[in-house]
Length: 378
Image (tube, rainbow, N blue to C red; front, top):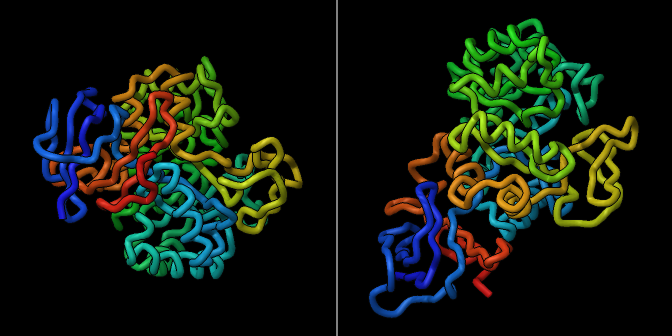
């Protein structure tokens, strides 16, 4: 069965054009300019962009990926899909070895179904001084041997691990991750500039939520921020919720790294899509007040209640990105990080029909996953 979306403003990293596209068997088969041939479903001149790709997400709709509860994970994925995220990687938080193995094993089944794009271990190999909303009593030095057991539990679906480069065993674990085809990310780290560079040289290629949970940028002690922004091998994650990072610093990172090395993330936790109240993030108790999630004890920011449509909209309206650049940082660049840019991340013939219809004010008006509507245009 074929479906043509007509009268659309199609946004790609290369630009915006008035046109149409045809979908068959969940794939894009034609992309054209001007008026569509024959009958089609008009989207009323609204924007059509590729589905968002979120490489750092802990849950939503009351579901938390770190628990490994599959039904709750499904609800979280569904919530984020309605907000335009058609590809989600599940991020875990620091836990005991057994807890991480149980969660990874359960989530691996959802990866095998195609519901999740992979598993990210954000911890336990992070700095106690910069642990944020992770339980400091469960932190451990990076261990290639232990990490091998976590990779095994994930049955080929572990895609990323966050490591603090300054810890004993960190560089060996980064090398081991790279050898296993797992993305090593630097973050939750108290490393200086030179140590961060050493982590990159060992094979790290992502900065976990740049600026957050690391020493600030300094003119005499540049720290990890300068090293991560300056190195062409590194893609930097940014949380654009108006809480984690000031728009001016987001703009700085985007202008230095460019859209090809910048990836928007949500870092969402179980409260995303819900109201204020008490929640959990792994073993930690979290209270959401005014949409901001913080630990009950200590008050550290504990993930976010962000959805990618809001991050995208803020990037255009407050940071000043063009629509094509915003599409790249929300879709194509994170797809490249996951090694999936040949299948998702942009509107092109042969790619999955993962699409979002946006109004003039950049509100989600419809979402499609693999050629099927999650929410039909309204």
